[in-house]
Image (cartoon, rainbow, N blue to C red):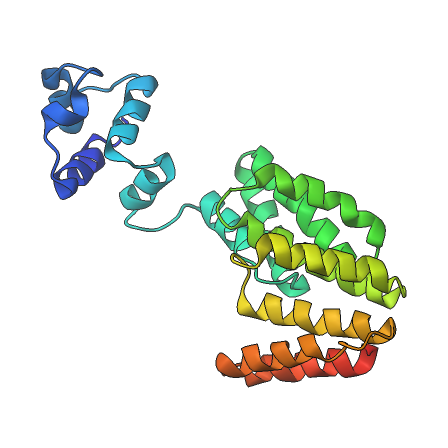
Length: 240
């Protein structure tokens, strides 16, 4: 059955009538039987109901599961919500994926597992050739919080470029990141970018070398994130 009772609760909560939701999709009597779970409906009709209710399939599943995500969706949420390429968190997600895949195959989970392995390798091996994984991530552009992870991955690459002494390339990438993602990135990510811009400008002998690190300090002080400020200062002091 396609969660008729759950659809009924959503409809009532939104203040819609059965006639409104069923119009041009199904007869009201057939729709009434669907809500009462006396009969099922075609999947296309069900999708049209969701559109009429301005709901997604995942939102309905979430409600139907006592406002809890299923195992697969929770793994996906955890992955796309990662603020940074945290190796420990990535390893944990890999374990969760392996456990989930024992029950059934899922193409998205297999993709996420590959990306986790690449991100772990990026952090441990500093392998800049793994930049190709960005292309894999961008397949999911617009999917939940995928942009956060893409931004985090790109910011990690700038540190590898700094380590390799390619300060012009790192500066170019940092500038593009801020131009493209400033409105959507976290204040911590923005502070890291500012600090690394100052590192690059300092290494390139530019007169405005300290401007961006001062912005990073001010930003983190505004958010009262002094612990993170300590880490940013350590990185800046080490590489400048």
